[in-house]
Length: 420
Ligand code: PLP
Image (cartoon, rainbow, N blue to C red):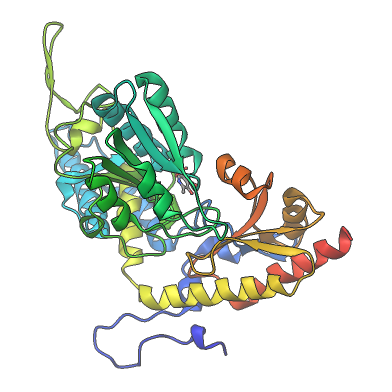
């Protein structure tokens, strides 16, 4: 038995959480599926994770017993739905170590980052001001800033990475100057698994009074996230990357911004006073939540936070690391395979097989039931930096196993033979 598969907690230690990948796995109905007649090996978790029974049930239960108009109706069901929605906000706040009044519900990271780029961009950026992003960014944390700069006459600067795929912090430090108004960085690269030193970036940005926006899409599923320790101004997450529903997420806004920022959208639920002559907006997170919210998404997000709290996450991280190491070591033995990215990082492994297009490689893997990502992964600037048009990516969750890593490696070997 692989040591990482043993429950991490000694039996009988009171109150301690255990971690057993097989027990985690058993909670995910989707993982029992077959694809092309083979057991599904799901290694596309950075794109979207599977959902555990507890999350599925939470949404069904909400629809069956508490569905009603949030923050609108005076009737009992409206109050029940509002309670559910607001307790999900509290859960999301606890995940990020924030207070609920600084947690804004969004459709996900893309929505959250577009909100910030619109509202903060309009607030802070003028002619000749600068926004710094990095070469690691997903398009969701690149294009909203590019467009904001175009709108405001500002300049977008892109901090480089090193050849090993780490952020070049010295280069970023040299790039940040008196014109820098916003620094927007990913916490974890969705391509290379690089973990970006957000606290250090915050202290660099603070030196010139710039705001820091963090794309947290790939972080909370793997790492503990503490926005107060990080010290950032904004932090965006998506529920579907951490075992919750798609189309739901939250944006943390630090106390200095939540009531100050102009909303990016106007409509029901965010108004204090509305008339043709004068309109004013409420304070607090609802200011940024115009329209009927995605209550079921919020409920599922809350259940996903509870799920993340139900097992020993340090042990889950060790398990994920052992799988990552096994993939990297295994690929290292396969002729013409090359792994991209730093030696240490989140459990996301992008690789290429010389002479085989990423899509062909992923197609061979798919025929074996192995689901991986292939393409530019919404990170074209990074692909350009790496000098490749596309890569193949295996991304891990706590429910993955060493047997699944073997299936992946067998598939890559097979592709190598087919295209030899
Ligand atoms: N940022 C990163 C690093 C991502 O990996 C993703 C999704 O893959 C996003 C942003 C966009 O997230 P969403 O599609 O949930 O809005």
